Image (cartoon, one colour):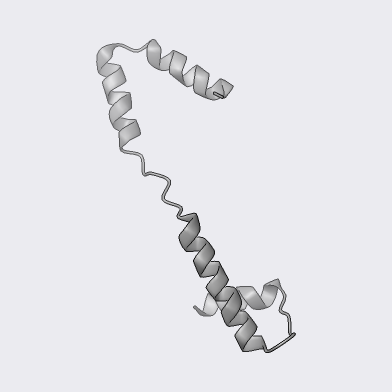
Length: 74
């Protein structure tokens, strides 16, 4: 489903002449893609969790501050 903003943008683009539309298209094609790789992030997070468990020992827990310190060290 299209949002109101998306619809408004499309309506505005439709008001442009051919050259202006071409410039907008070139601009949009130049935008960086969303490169977030969830699988890679998930694997990295799991590995980090396992490293934390190994360094803390069996049955020990760590809070967010310890995790932040560990991340800063890497």
